Image (cartoon, rainbow over all chains, first blue to last red; front, side, top):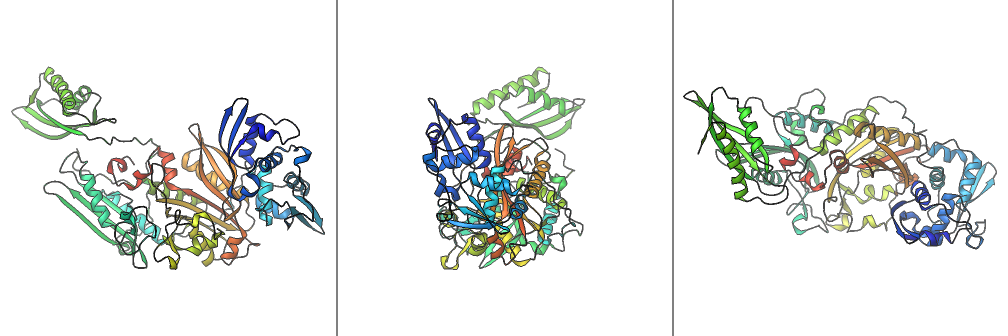
Length: 401
Length: 234
């Protein structure tokens, strides 16, 4: 909802505090403030009225009433409505201990009554009980917990003192969760990386009533089909054709009215010949394959780091092979290549072949050129390679062509 | 390339967040509880005091399953797991409920139709909002480091009263990270427990969002791409 600061001010007996203070009060005690737009000597406030408060707080008058409670400042007399026994929408019977027990703040009966009064809630005493008379427009207030919410937010939820939970005995392990983690540990140690696939697919046994798209109308019956596609996709991105892609997934599949947790393990490579293999079992089939000690994934947790987005543009692979004296270290050569390959070198150089011949050493490196912003031309890769070759030849090394 | 040492695989970033979260909550005595991804209308909505006419129940927000008469759906939040557990187990208890949830919304860099939540609840006597705030702040400090600042705000969720939301300051921005509150008495009643006897400290967090914040990931869809160029960084 959008409200004008100046317009709201008209409801008040005195000028409002500065806009920053008003915004802070709304944010801390009532609603999110999405935007504050200066308009001349006014401000337009975009307020996200909570859904349960729509009936009373969506109009300028209604929101001014709320603001009056938050700031503890009176409205002009003509805008004040009072709640009495005969016009109360409902009555909520409560005790101070109900409020204190929920919000955990040692707050007196008098303070509670005062907070509620700011919200036009009149509190009457009825023997040992308190009775709150709820204004006609506050449809959201019906039970004592609602009153605790009102008192808590006017007091300030930020101010509520943080307390530690009482200590309890260590929890029992969840057998399924534990088993899944043990399986993960084994497969990770074996070089498999974990993927999370999509539940939605284009065929299956359980159908979604209103799918996002026609090829996402069913719930998967297996993990293997998705995994095969994922392996195929990843094979397009390998640097060397002999590289193996190794993946696993632990996830739910839907067969008839049954849900089943499965483990799929897959691998693939382009050479010596294209092969993609996936096996899939129930998670429960792994019970006897995992060690009995508790799962521990701590060593697979990456310490704090910043993720680097990778380029979506095609890459160009180039190889360079050369003879160097036997005494030359491959790392030194790689460093020289890297320093001369220019800014478009995304990965590498990777040393992939080496052999000795007549006191000399042959080294072969692969370089990956790629731009984060566009598709590279062959010409750009060629230019970069020419610089590399020039630098190597300047060293007196023989580049094999 | 060293051919002798076998390289280890990479644990998915969402699994990393779930593992770290359960480690922290285990220290607070929380037990892991899981539940079905196909849920009944009762546990997903009714038991959680979500009104029959609530927009979240509509076809454009929830994936209802065929046949519609069966009133089965893909759970829209992990709170459904809590309702099941509370129905089947006498409190007191502390549970953590990680799991995949579903929302019928168009996907973009910050929205996915499937994502992960990890929430939980403490059901006990003599616990109050200070405990709720305490356990959540403890968790975020351990997950994201001591330097973060907190800002609590009042909020509204059908199944809690009072309701809260927590923003954390990350870099120089306030980010909304968790919804929380004290269980609404109707939840206790629906699950067959005495609302006057128990308090429930409930919270829910989106795992994908935590991972995006923690690692600086800008596109939620990467979690489900299976792309090793992404996964290898973790």
